[in-house]
Length: 623
Image (spheres, rainbow, N blue to C red):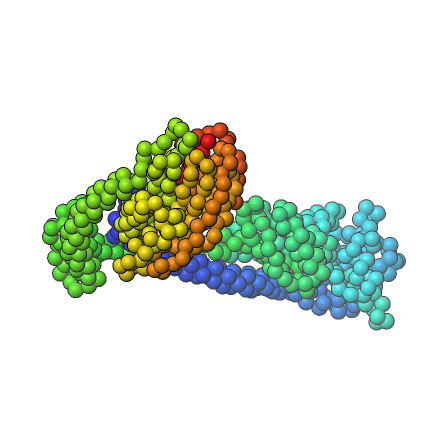
C-alpha cells in the first residue's frame, strides 16, 4: 500500500506512535547518558579503591620485610665479629618471611677481618631448603651493585628495581637494602632481603574486577611488572591515545595519582587509574568500558525491547480505537462522493454521538440541500442567460446591419469601415451616403456600452440619416441631432460625433466635431474646434469649419477604442502610435486595406488582451 493510500486511522496511529517514540528515545538517551556517566564515575572510584587495596597488600608484605631487616641490624652490630652468627641471622630472615628468597650482610671493603669481599648469604633452594654462601668475589663484585652502593653511600634504605641476580639467587627479584652503622654512625655493612617478583605477580593476577582488566606496576626505572592473560600492558597500548599513555607513564614515574582514557584495541575504549607505592614504584588498574558499562547496556537493551513491544501494542490500540471512532466519518465520506457524482438526493448515514463527526455530517446535509437549491437556481439562471444571449446575438446582428456595408470602391471616392463591439452589442456608429456629388458621413461613440449604448446609437444614427437629408448646413445638422437626442434623455447619455460633408466636384470639406477624437487627413491630425458632445445641452451653438481638399486625400476616422486599446500591462495604443502607423503605410493602398491594416496594428499591440471598448474605423480615399 502506498503512503498516500494509508487510512486516516493508520496515519493518526503512526503519528501518535512516532511522537511517543521520539519522546521515549529522548528519555532513553538521557537515561543512558546519565547512567553511563554515573556508572563510569562509580567504576573509576571502585577501580581506585581496588588499586589502593592492592597497593596496601603489597606494601604490608614489604613492610614485614622492612621490619625484619630493621630488627636484624641491631643483632649484627652486637655479633658482627661472629661469622657463624651472621649466617644464622640471614638464615632466620629467610625462614621467617615466606616472601624472602634470600638475605645477605654485605660488609664494606676490608672491614671484616681485613677481607676485601665478605657477604654471608642465605637463600632458598629450588627444593625449598635453606642454603648459604659467601657472595663476594671477583665474579660477583657487589660493591658496584645498586642494592649495596646506594644505601652505603646515602645511609638510607633502598628498594631496587627488578633485576636478575645472576651469581646470587639466579632469579628475577628485587632487593630491600638497609645500611648497618657502627657506634660512630658510620655505614659498615648493608643488610638485604631479596624478594621474588612471583608473589607480587600472584597478587596482581588475583585482582581481576572485570574481564578486560589488569593491574600493572611500574618501577622507578620504568620496568613493568604484572601482565594479565590477555596481555594488557600500558607499555604496549596502541597509539590511538598515545599522548594519554605517555602522560600516564610520566605521572606514574613522578609518583602521582590520576585517571586517564585509553584504547585497548581500535574499538575497545578503556580507562586507567594509578597511584604510587611507598617504595617509589607506581601501580595502575586498567579496565575496559565495555565491561564497566555492560549492565547499563543490558538494561538499555531490555528497556528498548520493552519500548518496542509497548509501542506495538500502543499502535494496535490506537489503530483499532481510532478506526472504530472514525467509521462514521468514512460512511459520510462515501456518501459525499455519491453527492459529488451528481446524486444530490442520497441519504447521509446517521451518526450516534453528538461530536465533531456529527457536526460534519450535519454540515454535509445542509450543503446537500443548498446544492440542490443552488443547482435549480443555476439551471433557471442558465436558461435565462442563454435566452438573453440569444436575444443579444440577434440584437448584435440587427445593430451591425444598421450601418452600411456596401462600400463604394469605384469613382472619385473609396470608403471602407469596420465596427467591433467590446460586448455583444456596442455604442459606436458610423454612416455615409451620397447625395448628388456630395458625400455625407459621420462617426460616433456613445458614452454607454451594451444594450443601452446600442439603443442610443440606433437613435442617433437614425437622426443623422433623417436630418442630414434636409439640405441643412453641417453645424445645423449637428445642432438638430443634438436637440433630438436631448429631448427625453433622462439617462444623461451622450455621444461624441464627427460629421462631415465633401463636395466631390470642388473638394470643399465642411465638418463639425462634437467632442470626438481628431481625425487623420493625409497622416496628420485635423485639430478641429472643440464642440460639446451631443445629448448634453439643448440648442447648443455648434460651429462648423471648412477646408479645401487638393489632390488625392486619405481620411482616417476612428473612435477612442483605437487610441485607448490596452495591453495586459495597461499600456495604451495612443495617438502617437496612430500617427506613426499612418505615416508608415503605403499611400497607394485602398480604403479597405488601410482599414484592415490599422485594425491589425491595434490587435498586434494588445497581444490578445481583453478588448475594453468598442472599436470603429472608417477610411475614406478621395482621388
